[in-house]
Image (tube, rainbow, N blue to C red; front, side, top):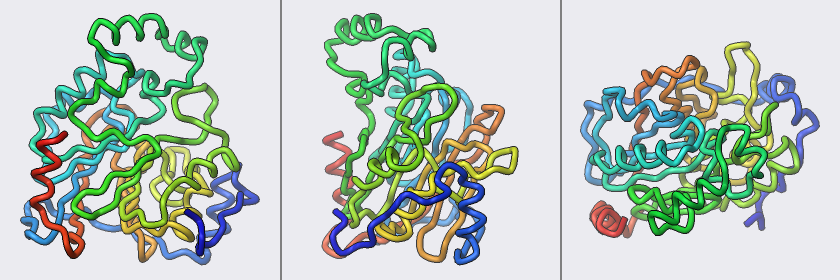
Length: 298
């Protein structure tokens, strides 16, 4: 995956993203971008992507206006604790949305989707493996991800939509309390980003990269430095969609990649941030008709 591209190394300030960004930003273009107007119709030669994230089980009854589009992208944390009833409700909600294709990754709150979590970690959130297994067995399922019947679920994997290549990754920096899909900053997280193919057009991650959509209420950068370097120096996607840091909702650009923090919930977990959309040119040799085929087979 990394042949012919710059090798990404662990940044010397990886443990201090604010310090890293202070040093890096001197040579960075960093522009705040307006949100596209959903009233403007999409042309036949483009796919409209509608982005949300961090809905935390609250969007289902929020009455939030979902703009028209072709593909829904959700950048993780669609539950509060990954309870199976939460996942059932969210999957049902997805089924009612009119988008032809829905693409989804997990986040650190979606605990039961992380099959590597220990019993002790699950118990600290009031969850148990035995109850999860019993719940799945009663429905003829082998894994929690099989509950997501109304979405394409990405876990360090890709999907092509009308020739547009998307890659999804749920990982985020490990915090004080162990949650789902978390690794330590530096080499551990870099191993996750090393898996991202270089031909990715749209990257969907749960964590933001350092410097874009990662500023907390305390005015600290908490994004991943290695993710930023991977995006800018190796993969170079046209769009990078994420969430995780609710209070940094919005759109920025470095002149090539457009960064979208699509967090639906505010810092106080109010689902009031509007979905963010963008239009992507359909590559030559592909057409919008492929969406109909994907819809039938999803």
